Image 1 (cartoon, rainbow, N blue to C red):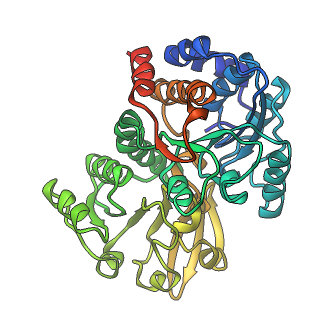
Image 2 (image 1 turned 90 degrees about the horizontal axis):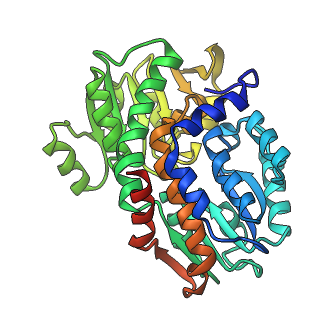
Image 3 (image 1 turned 120 degrees about the vertical axis):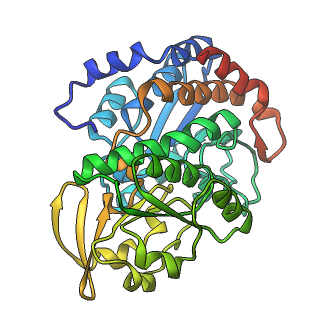
Length: 372
């Protein structure tokens, strides 16, 4: 985790030693002169090279937080010093967060690069100045599906190299590491309930088992349950699994994965963490009304009836809000892919018809070749 005391310059130098694909993609990025990019993302240290690439290519850049809980103030300040318009700060209240987004939209962006589709959803996909966009999350793609878009948006969340590395393996690995760092406890011998068995949930289940947990999987999709059972994970319903679970990880990509009324079924002393894009997968408002103390950073003890439950990272994306997210060297591929996708969007992509499109294979292949 980064803090205001971190030597950001030194840390960025360390990151750059291990991100050669990002450097190569940045050097090959076509001119973005005249473009105004609005980037809605997690304002984390690993995103700095992406913004540097955009600025070096001549773009005007605005940044908004995908989630105020994952914003690093020192990163926002560094981006501001480089010339990015970025008023966001960590834990901005909802009204201030929304005001920042409105101001960025009012600046008239020509291209969008988003994690969660906030800008597109806020303007119903019809912002007049926008010629095209990128979306990096399954949650965002789901939101876009209900909109009549006036411009093309390219889905790079479902690109195989992102699904196969970041979503499938690294979120789970870093969630298990972050649990140890935040709680000071192991997963050894604990029953872990993974709610949602998509790529992220699969990685969480694998990592928890490797860290010594007894893992159960809950998913409404019979095909997902079959896949889990094929790998030896017992499957269960929410009602049956909650009373047994020492640790819960939500990874569904949808709000309400655990409804408020289900809290009374949780095992006393259970830890609740979310790995989805928004905190809405957990009943955070209900839990927050029941907080009695904060025994450690990122840990809130909540009293539900006669039981204590521990909410981790306030229900925000656990591996990033309370941990470091992906390792630098593996995120190199993600950043390179983001840069390659932006170059494609600004050239060929804006000529596509309105609607959601898969990012072409040739774009991911360029990123993969640079990484290799």
